[in-house]
Length: 211
Image (tube, rainbow, N blue to C red; front, side, top):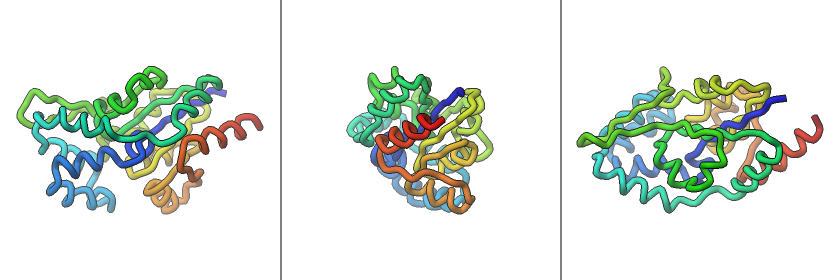
């Protein structure tokens, strides 16, 4: 059986919702107005995130990356990667945030993931300009589009928030915490609760051993 894992970044690999923290820090007024609208699903992620990001000066981009560098990662991530390497199962990072933020936190670890899909930014103008190869109707990074690029019998999702909802609904198995768990309950989609990656490793170890 061919298996693959799709893992969110902000609030999943990182302990905190790093991307939301960046938006609030670098565009506080617009974030205060639009983020609650996105969480309430009255405004699409595509519209809201684009509007906030494209209000931030390009000169702030280096500071955004420096702010991100200090963010701690959730316990057990390296152990999960070790386990997946042993099992021959690839992990793809899919983020609704900025690619540069993902890369700076992962550092050398990014060599151990199959791919990173995230939002790219052009800093050549006065303000940031965003681009995504997987822009969808409601998302800047349509995670289900990304999943379709990787044929597999078993597609597993790991996430924590609204940006992971469609991915979670599409996955054959989903590990959910925080807001994502609440959204999945509303959709009556079963999920496995989790707080650290060691729990995911242990669950998958038992599951795959039984198959």
